[in-house]
Length: 105
Image (tube, rainbow, N blue to C red):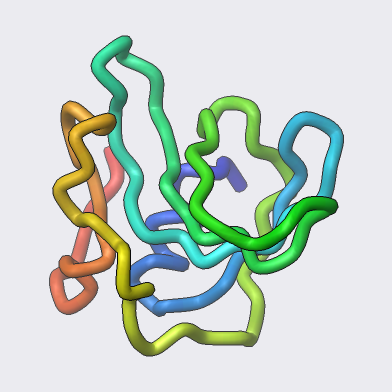
């Protein structure tokens, strides 16, 4: 399955995701999917596990592969989560929308 619908579903279900990005395995809490000002589809997420420390990271969705939803859930947004992040020009799906349904074209 493509990364985009899996990431939206993970946000809706408040579930961590595992994926490959730039040849490395990542585990993250996905919070927002949208388009940057440059037109790139991006994911803003809180990195739970990677080679570096945890923290916020923006990923280019076309470079994400092997997405799986974890059984681990996150119930609240991280304190510094910004659902109106200015680096994302057009939001497709974000954490605060979790009670809405969505349809993919």
